[in-house]
Length: 174
Image 1: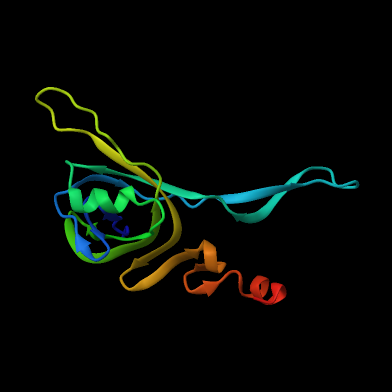
Image 2 (image 1 turned 120 degrees about the horizontal axis):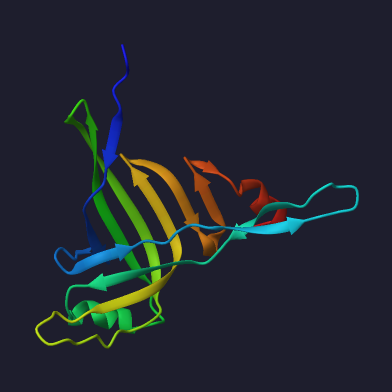
């Protein structure tokens, strides 16, 4: 008997800013993409060139707001104060034509605002406001399991609970 295909869908989310719900205030949230910095290595006797992991590139993202919200925008106007963000969603699993499971997915971020939008004004249209940010901390939990965690300032990089930098920190004496 052929095995039925499992399909996961994550189609909506809610954003929390310093613990407060932004329900209805965020049009879209672009989370950071974790990108490895790679260092090229070539040497005599090697027939080619290779790249090796050398760190994590800067993490950045954007938030598009549905309108101007003073309490939120004041936080994004302070470029010296980090902001804690949670993005909470529900992964729906489908198999055999029906929904078979719902699993929580939570993204935790510590961000630094990088701009303050003045807005794009068009007659009869809602104002467009988008803020960009840099990210120093990111943790993704799915069904309570930590899939990935990066803390740039604390030299933490974990995948599925495994500390990828334990020996590195020990070798550096930190």
